[in-house]
Image (cartoon, rainbow, N blue to C red; front, side, top):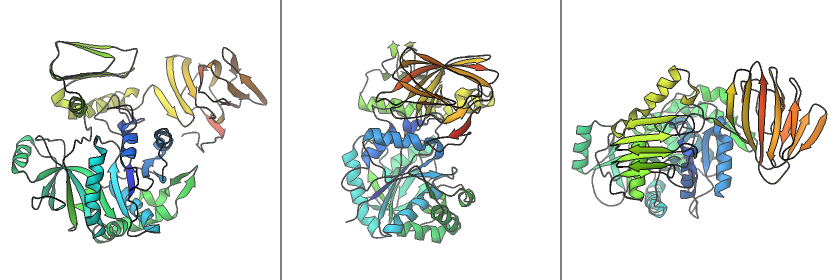
Length: 477
């Protein structure tokens, strides 16, 4: 029996978990419920003897984060596929089906978001095995979660009948209002739509041919013209941009007549808001007063609250709070009523309207060679802390508007400035004049840390002219 190919969707940029999740580093790459990130936990859940190496659908901004997190988790990727632009789930799933069909048209494909929480991996694997036989028989299997409350934040699946084992699907139901959610919960034949699908590659391609044929040629062309880029598979941009932005539900699922539902009764959450994070924490570690507080937070006489600080330098203390969410990072604090969890995205819109960088970007900027964060910024100068991974190197570059002073505080840097190459060790410094062609490398086996002081008339990240780059980035990337 051939192995199931997992396809992890990892290109989204959720806004309802702001300020921890932002466009530059969204929730799937954050450790929200444990030591592993949601993406790593999802990849591990879809690993094992029944699964092939995972295919990851992502975008150019996240490709190195995906590769690094898989490596940290000890999971080898089958393919990391770069979508040239976000086009929702329909074209991404078709591209994955076409890739699997190249070697095995009857091969099973399991598509799953990379930001869900399913603590009982064994129970989920049993549900997948339950649906595999139906998928081999030509059914498109979707997974429904047994609801434990009248939730308005999820879409629903209406079962055509009730019973054990895979069941035929009657229809998809959009997110309901509170009254309708109460009625569906009482009816007993509705499940939450988990957005997880299992099918054979051939059956999904045939479904597109029947219900969304306009996708086949451009997605097929984007795949046939794809190019390998440092081990990533980069889909061709021109045909991909002609594809309609649409979800798999609207494009195919709501029109197909060969749908089967497998019911999953274990714990599940899409962590679609801070209320879901609060609820998941209480499920894992119940609290008499409904208080969820991390190590950087203290609750005094509080009831049903979430207190969280992702910065060791910023402590959160709540006194006499009721039904509130307080989430802090090093540069932003969210305070909201728990009932308004789905409205957190409005904060992002409001900050974007004010052109506040906190809307989409973190102070810490992740790069393929490591990361940097701004320590101080004022007129004509900026101070950064830079961490370079062992063996990694920044691009050979120059600047038009700024000069730089580098002070190594840990490890050793190999520094190129024009024709000079120098080893700079701990407590040593070097000056990079304006316009000089320079590069920084870490030749050691431990992370290298340095402080960079920039001075000049313009200090933006786009003031970079790249001449060579081991990561094949352009000046704007």
